[in-house]
Picture 1 (spheres, rainbow, N blue to C red):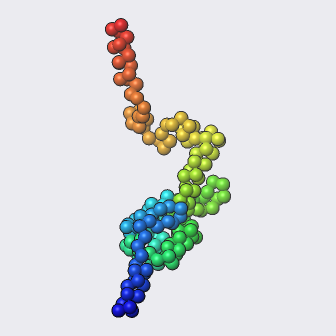
Picture 2: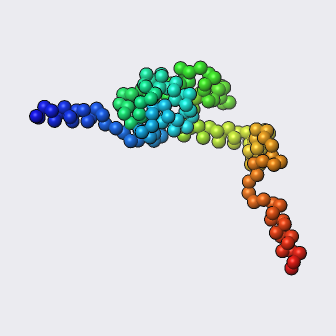
Picture 3: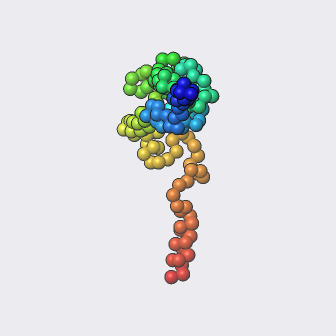
Amino acid sequence: MADENEGDTVAEDREEFRYIVRLMDTDLDGYRTVEHALCGIKGVGRRIARAATILARIDPDERMGNLSDDAIERLKMALQSLEKRLPKWMLNRRKDLFTGDDLHILGADLPLKIREDINFMRKIRCYRGIRHERGLKVRGQRTRSTGRKGPVVGVIRRKQRASGGKG
């Protein structure tokens, strides 16, 4: 009887489920599959997540909470070495402006790099930088009829005109 109870505790330790897995400074949902949970990290989409699971030799359809410490460590190493092991066209920062290297930026560094690039464009006064400064569309979209934000100017004028004419 005592031997059976020992076997149960060992089985429970092996099947310890993690509801939240911390990876690359991001909390990932343990219920989701590894491939979909990795998409919660900034800079990781479905294609990169699939590639990372293949590089780490992990089943992409397994639940994130069921992974062992060793598997999570392999996944972390695979994510850190993406730029060396993936083709250049899959990386999210090719020919970096300052270093000239092909990089794949993940986590909290991604918004910082984007903000840094926008500030650089504003500083050199290029067209895109000026559009960012003014809060206008940057990539050639229409601005006459779409992308309006703020109060509608025409309606306010009509209300002002109506109150101004009566009084």
